[in-house]
Length: 232
Image (cartoon, rainbow, N blue to C red):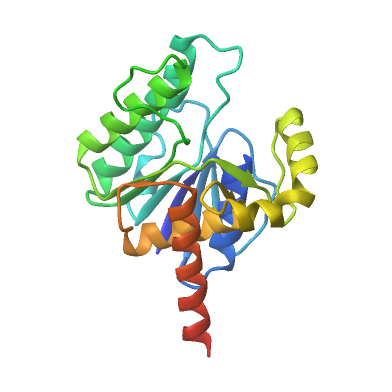
């Protein structure tokens, strides 16, 4: 399976990239981003791209990708609804449309967030925008589409966030994570588990369209079990 990856320099995307590079079923990763990842690996090919609404110069390279892991995203803090909608909704739909125009039926895995509101009635701007995008993306019908709605995500394997405040929060929560994982497993996950769940959904599908932390953890666990069985 060849993966098209957006957001590989962010926390979630870099975690997904690590899992893709380690996974035997992922034969290649085509990363699209404004900056290079700084990673060198035989599986990894990179496109530096500035215009996330226009892929006319790169679209031919999407044609042999079996699935897209769309991990590109920004915090809504300090952004107007118009600006946030452009980055969150318009960038995502442009990528999906570009992929499906050259590879109809390719799988699309989108990283949304817990609390997104497809009915767009929430008082929180980000929840309305995210929810509206989910609805629009599913209506495209270009290929199997899985919506991941993680809550708290603990970074693993040296992964960090580009947001300093988030890194402080993760550092504080890190020692508590094993306890949180035991007492509230449906509310917490890790970048490692999320990466494995993305790969499994991209390759085999998922039991339901919208996947919260509990579903993410279950998919990751199933993937670990299956990989162990195949290697034994």
